[in-house]
Length: 225
Picture 1 (cartoon, rainbow, N blue to C red):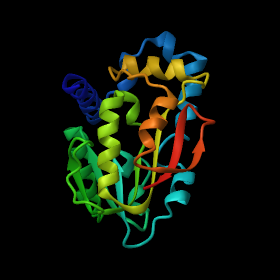
Picture 2: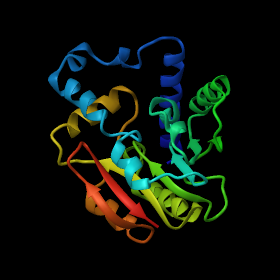
Picture 3: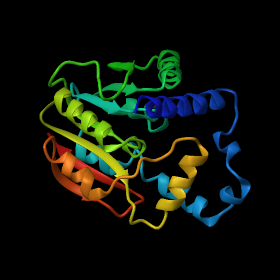
């Protein structure tokens, strides 16, 4: 488990380093795959499978004073302008280079947020019942079920009772799923396969499912604690 977590962390650190040097992270992907119709369709699909999805904001309904946890935040704060939400933004990520890059952006732009933290999402550095709303998008596909169980338990701990939360997992029934797995392999971010039923069994003790959207390559769950 520790080795796998480190592999994923290094892959994202590498991606940030390439971006900072003006290098396309997709440079290592074979041209045949990059020029395929599956790759083009996958990139288009990805525009709807992120924290900037309007449905996510509508469900979470961020309001002034609410603490918003972006777990496994990546560059979501900047890419999807989550700093424009009226809630107070807190980002947690296992990639130190990602956190450093976003901290630099926040400082240079004079953006006010709650904080950014370099941390394992199975050990979130906040007290119990701290957050009002939260999201975990594009993260769980990399990890095996025992680790996911730790993450769900930890999220339940730091979220307030009846807090709204959204997360996603890969949709193995979607025709673009094999292409997504292949893309992640090229980026040295291998998926840890598990079934939808296995995941939902883990989810049940920690969250109530309010709505599910399984029409995309990622299944989006709209939850409450």
